[in-house]
Length: 353
Image (cartoon, rainbow, N blue to C red; front, side):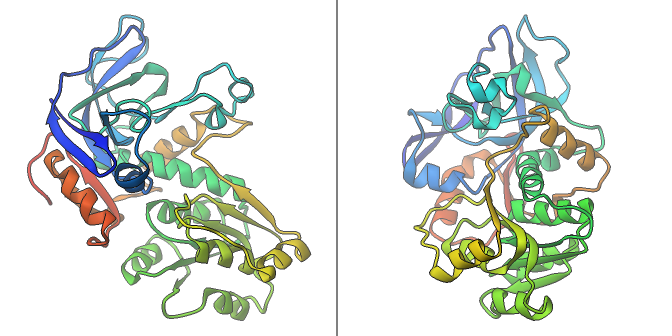
């Protein structure tokens, strides 16, 4: 089979490798669609994985090709996706149900072989069946959708809240949808690309701000008479939006950082003063899951709403490529040659669409 293997940062090779053999409690999945996460290019091109060579990619969907002898409740031919984080199950956080905070987790695509391949295997406990109404491409985005839902829950968004989503890549666009579904009366989307903001508008954003043209902080002060936004979700992971998030939150508001940072962050005196004087709560949001809910809940909720057509991904799936193009696509993204939404690889298909 073909797989995209990372040999060193910047050295991705698509090559023939054996189809994985499943263990007793593992599932072999024929990968039909796999997406590039925002964390994938920095890992593949700069920071690297935990061992080499390693098949990268962790957002995917496909169908079961085989199951181990100890697997119950899953059968060949079923359409599935899988949670990429594999918890140890024994640390204090796992025992408390906070699997996303596991001290010794494994992870598809960075610590163990991933989904940019024609076939991949994972443990059966992480596999979830896709609703019949959800196609493979949409199901391959269930990870960022679940991550966005986790951030929305961390923010504490409730009926009647005002919400700002800073950065409307895939996670931000899912956050816009979740915020509206939860009952936000106003959602502001902020980005630097008009194309992404237009998609955000179509998905429910009430106000869209291009930060290259308008100052989001001034805009919020204007439309709220200086009161600020109740809930802020920062998905870009850059100093500007992290700083802005603190400056636009209301008294007793919340700011959630769920964008992975790849640049230094220094909050200004004004931002820290705002957080302190307005008693703003600042949260981190990592992966998906909740202490009060089973680990799969963010995922099961996501797949349920996708099945009902209330959470969608197709409007921002912008590129589709065959597996052989993985090295070139990563190079283009890393060097800023692509403006893109969600990019998918179709391991059993032909050329770009």
